[in-house]
Image (tube, rainbow, N blue to C red):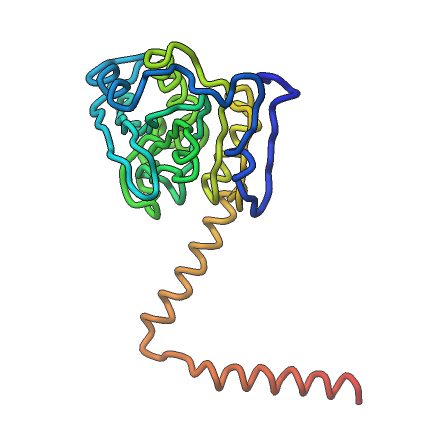
Length: 257
């Protein structure tokens, strides 16, 4: 573990991550990491670079809006097909926020507005394949993509991301947090179990930890619904409900007679 006293593992069905994004940490953790390094300079430093096995494919300054401050949006790729984005705010407070995915991933989720507002660097990835988050066909003939989805994408992304941060600011984050919901919650639990030294805090929201069981249930439900919709003889649900109620009352009456 990075530091048992500082590492906090939160595995909850529903949990607000705000506490992790406020005042967590001590010392100089809340102070800007490198005064004078703004979003424009961060982009200029990383543009076109290859760092720790990841190639920066784009680095663009995103102007401030009502929701978020100005930040540098860095897009990078770890071959063969693991893409990630890192958003580096105009004034970094020395902390990192990694957002998990959803469904079967396949795309990069938007940045955490709350984290960016507070001056965190935020990271998210597509976990190593591109496609519809409801489509698992990427794993049929690509064992490496399946392993990235299963457990390896977060450490694979975080390694070059940390080196990029060091290149820009001269040091690593003082605090690093992971947050995820559903499949992202599963990723949170995986990282708590296998890569806990990477983070000082982990938030697992509604974790889909029994992935095979959950997906099996979804599949059975979808097939049942598709069968009903495709049938030329759709059931009269009101009649079915009425018959079920009548049978229930008949059984009750018989058992009390």
